[in-house]
Length: 82
Image (cartoon, rainbow, N blue to C red; front, side, top):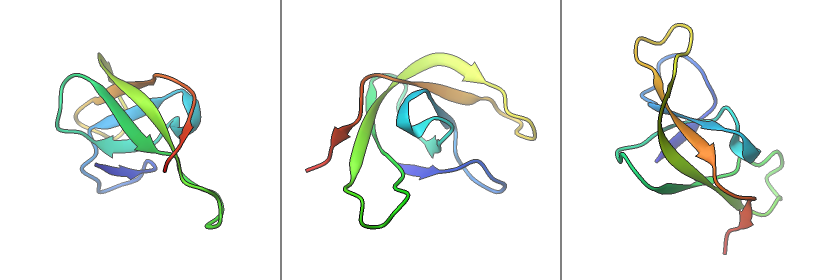
């Protein structure tokens, strides 16, 4: 899984909606299920956390992108990664 903030020249096909990763773009290869997305850290010393996002049939159009993104909806509060 490749996660990044919106920008030019990426191969992302999904966007996180809601929760701690809201707006984060990623590339997914599956059509159903729940994904665990790493929560971006603001400081390098912060503990790693993850959030679960549910793959939906919803598609989100984004200006400048030919194909719509797959909407990933926040499934629960973040959990600490062990």
